[in-house]
Length: 443
Ligand SMILES: Cc1cc2nc3c(=O)[nH]c(=O)nc-3n(C[C@H](O)[C@H](O)[C@H](O)COP(=O)(O)OP(=O)(O)OC[C@H]3O[C@@H](n4cnc5c(N)ncnc54)[C@H](O)[C@@H]3O)c2cc1C
Image 1: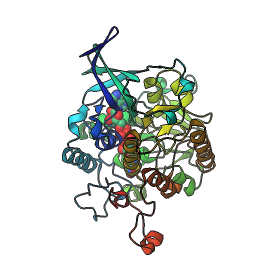
Image 2: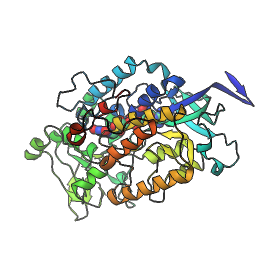
Image 3: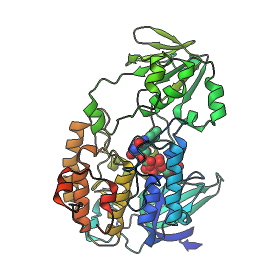
C-alpha cells in the first residue's frame, strides 16, 4: 500500500491497461517490460468472444489473418473459420505461452479514472516535449473488485484503454410513446442478454416460438440461424452498396447453413426503416403486423457510452470530433490526450492484427525509441485521415482503416525504424498478400 496525500494506493505503476480482451492481452504482452497491471471486469479473458457470442458465432476473418505474429494457430492452413470457443482457446494459449495472465486482475472493474493535471491546464500538454513515462503518476484509477462496495485505488504514469467497442452497453432502439416493449405481451431480449444464456436455456427460449430479430449485421445473422427452427426474422434497412460495408469494417460472413434455412422458409426477410411493438409482436411501417413470442434486438452496442463512463471530464468531449469519430494518431493516441493510448478503437479486416501492431508501436514509443510529433502535426494527420474516413464510411461513423491498412502499417513501421516493405523479394511485395506474420520483429 502506498499513501499519497490522503489516499491509499494499492500500487503506483508505470502502465495500467483497462480490459482483458484481444487488445488488452496484446497490450500486456507488448508492454510486459513495464510489468503492467491489467484490469478485467469479468473472470475471463477474450471479451466479445465470450460475452457477445452465441453457439453459431464464428470468426469472419480467415484464421491466418487473425493471428498473433509470433504465435501461429495450431492448424493455420485450415480454411474453416474458427468458432468463438476456438478463438478463446487460442487467446488463452497465447496468454499462457507468454505468461501474460500474471498481469491480469480478474473481476476488477474500473469504475473511475482521474487525471492528475500537473499543469492545471490540459491544453498546455504537448507530449512531444516529454517522455510519456515521466516517472510521476498521471492517472488515478478506481477499481471495484468482486462487485464489492469497497473501491481500490491505483496510480499510473500511462494508461492503455482496451475496454472494447462492443459488448457491455446495449444500444436500444428509440421507439414512439406507447409503442415500446412495455405494450408487447411476449419477451424482449437484447443480443447481449441472449449471449449470456447457456445452450439449454437458449434452446428452451426459442423452442416452438415465433421469433422476430431486429437488425441485419453480424449479430442478427448469427441469431437468425440459431432461431431458424422458430421462424421469422426482419432485417431493418441496409440501403447501401457492398464496398461501403467493407470500407466501414461492417462486412458480415454468413454462417454455414444460412441459405439452407432461408430456402426452407425458416428465415424470412423484411426490409424496413421504421417499426414498433404491438401487443402481439412487431408492426412495420407498411402496417404489416408480425406475430411474435420473442423479439431479439440485434441493435448493437454503445461503445462510446462505455468510454464516456470511464474518462474524466473534459476528455470524452475532446475525444470525439463533431461527427462522432474518435481521431487517433497512428490509430492509438489522441493528439490532445497523449498520456493514454486507445487500443482496439480502429477497426480493420483483422482487429487482432491492428491491435498487435499498434501495441508494438506503443511499446517503442514508451521506450523513447521515437517521439510523437507536435500536437499540431498530429492534428493535421488525424484531420486528413478523418476526411478520408468520412468519405468512405458515411453510414457508420467509425474509425475503419480497412481500405488503407497497408499504408497505415507502413507509417507505423517507419516510426519504429522497420522496413515498410516486409517481404523478402519484390515479386511477393507486389503480388503477395500481407498478413500479420509479415510484421514479426526480426523481418
Ligand atoms: C459478434 C462479433 C464478431 C466479430 N468478428 C470479428 C472478426 O471476424 N474479425 C475481426 O477482426 N473482428 C471481429 N469482431 C470485432 C472484435 O470486437 C475484435 O476482433 C476484438 O476481439 C476486440 O477486442 P477488444 O479487446 O478490443 O475488445 P473486447 O473484446 O470488447 O474486450 C474488452 C474487455 O474489456 C473489459 N472491460 C470493459 N470495461 C471495463 C472496465 N470498466 N473495467 C475493466 N474491464 C473492462 C471487458 O470485460 C472485455 O473483456 C467481432 C465482434 C463481435 C461482437
